[in-house]
Amino acid sequence: MAVFGGCALVMGVTGLLAPGALLATLGFADPAVRAPADHTRTFLTASSTASLNMGAYYLLAAAADWRAFFRWTVPFRLLTCAVFTAAVISGAAPTGFLGVGLWEGAGAVVTGYALLREGRLRGRRGTSYGG
Image 1 (tube, helix red, strand yellow):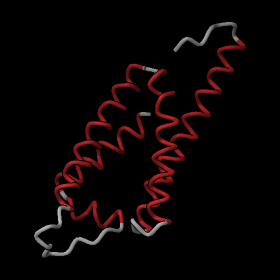
Image 2 (image 1 turned 120 degrees about the vertical axis):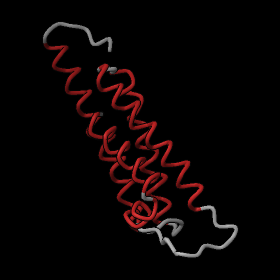
Image 3 (image 1 turned 90 degrees about the vertical axis):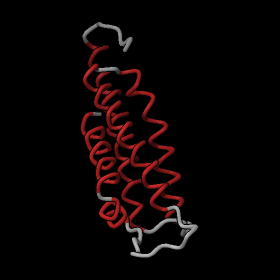
């Protein structure tokens, strides 16, 4: 959780302070001149702010060891993986964007596995898993 939170926070700050660098990392074009109706930078500002906020609450959840929150992230990160991957496959997003989807999917799988493993270990010790 803390690693994902840190990455999300850094990506959010990068998008706000160096939007061109973030666009390039994701495989999106960043032309010097944009059409009047091109709101790419506006959308990037909004999504970067969301990423910054998400990073902060993931870090806070990790610091508080809030396991219920960890469990909630698994299905939603899998959904994000599916939507982002579908966007690349359909041609709506560049192939560089696939990395974002795979990062989400891998994070969901690792988090889910860790929670299952931890639950089994706690169960063997005779304690309940109420997290």
